[in-house]
Length: 263
Image (cartoon, rainbow, N blue to C red; front, side, top):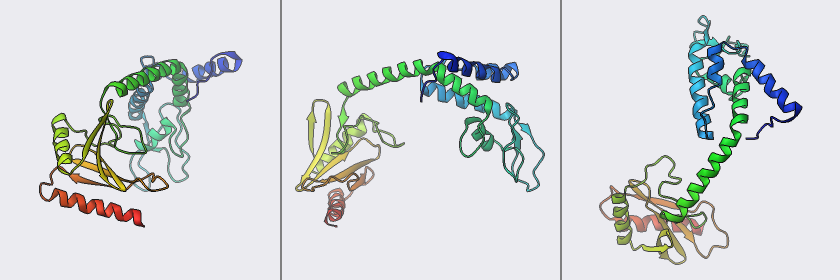
């Protein structure tokens, strides 16, 4: 995201042009598109933009039903644009109009929201930078003081809930259960400063356990003698719900991972 300088003739003219464009709107819509001043971060801006679009879509100018009997379609209530499709009039509601208002996909970007969102980004850039810096400082402090988990030999240690891809992190009690299971499987707990790793040494293989995800323990397998490091090491998991033959299941999955290194 690049800040468009407001200094100089070109920057001043661009801002004046945007203001003239937006002043063509009714007062309530102008105020809606000018209500970004409370945003302090890029996350605030994205949420504000979604809220604005959500309020604009219901104001679309509805068109009569199309000959093909498709869903409802409408004209943009801001710029009166009706789309460029040779087969349909207007934008499909709500998806097509939303794309038009946000400039997404292969759809004409509404001149009004383009002007409004670009102006907001320009005006809020300093706030975005300050918020991003403060967030990074908090993250750095957290990584110095909170427990981190080494779960991949090729990546930095992970925080409790980092990169779980939508899965829930374990509670403290659930983590204690996972630690007990790993101990029963023969894993060694290694602690360096605030970094914790659960390691199973099966020379030349090393297995790192990732116990952070609720309901399962993920295992990643690395070959210490390999000349090249695999970016996507073999991995497998064991579910908490499994109660019988855990050692056998772990050994079978480790052997399967071992066979991948022989290929």
